Length: 538
Image (cartoon, rainbow, N blue to C red; front, side):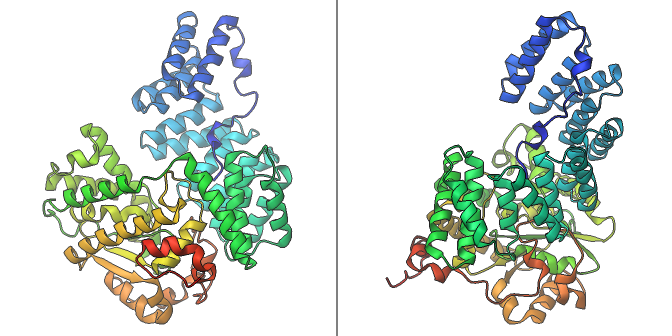
């Protein structure tokens, strides 16, 4: 997804509304806008106070104050400021758009979409309101509506690069790969070094990039003026095309360089993560028995390592007429974050103090937040891989929810993680040794929960699915409390949106030639050693 997308603003929306302000007040407004962008909270607040001292209730100052409060998570103040601005200028599309952002931050998604749509109604010829609406529809999982909004944005501004990229992403998620590729190529026409475009093309993993692409990527990487974000994405794309062409040493070199640059942005601390994981394990072991053991049966959690087949198993389940595939949901983490904010303590500090009634309340809050995924079907999947760390918490909070722990050969899964650019930083996948350490922690902790909750956690092996598809699918459905349905055998025909890097792969039948690690020989020995395996013969 394009970075800093919400920073783009349609030209001319606020200009005429600043007429009549004294030059000094205009300077304060400009200083406030820059300070908000740079995160200088006190500077921005002082500048806005200076404006309001000479122009009380000026809508643009109120709007910027709303932005400031949104950035600092002061939701009530943000909403109040933006509503005061709109009371002065009811037709100010930008203020309505910002009100949508504030409502989203406050957890009012229905209100947020109403505000974003109102912005589009007020400024139908401006690209930014459509882009903002499309971006949030896409984040919310409404891909068809997102495509329609983003097409409007691009129609108003064909050279608006973020809209072009995000439209390509939405088309990928809808399975419209030819159209998506055309959008990414159009973006490269506008900006040949656009890392997001190369990322989009490379993530359509069933479509090889060409020799011309490889040469183009190599030229781009030689540019001294390349932005770090573009250099990283381009490096991952070069690694992909080199692997497709069996240039394994070149692929490894390109991926190693890209991962090193990504790690420089935010280094992963394997030791700190191990301590954190052990602390959550110890705290979760002392949670009270649930008041309602069936609470949460509507949800099916799919956890494990990224790139292990979790999207494939979600696709299988989502082919069932009773299950909606919701992809990687943030709701579990956000519900726990809400409780941490309410208690003014991090999770590890309050987890042991929460009562069974508290956990029941939090479980119901999760079900409330995810209700939209069950509008048409009674159950939904939640396949954020890192939720494995919260398996113990789920036993108290949503004890009726089955957990599918997806496993793939650790060497193959680890190498696949190394090849994938992750945007949530810091990330464990930037070095082979960190990947191995993460896998060891994951397997060790999940073994504890598997022994403690064998009826609630199913270890689902990717390789077992390849060997006996129907038997494994029947067993998976039975574990989830679902009757067998033959549509699950033809999962690749399921008409749904897939919002992960596996969007292309799960729309084809099972592939039996996905192993790649051995082609790299001794280059992957650090990963093998970390996993306790023998190294390759040199």
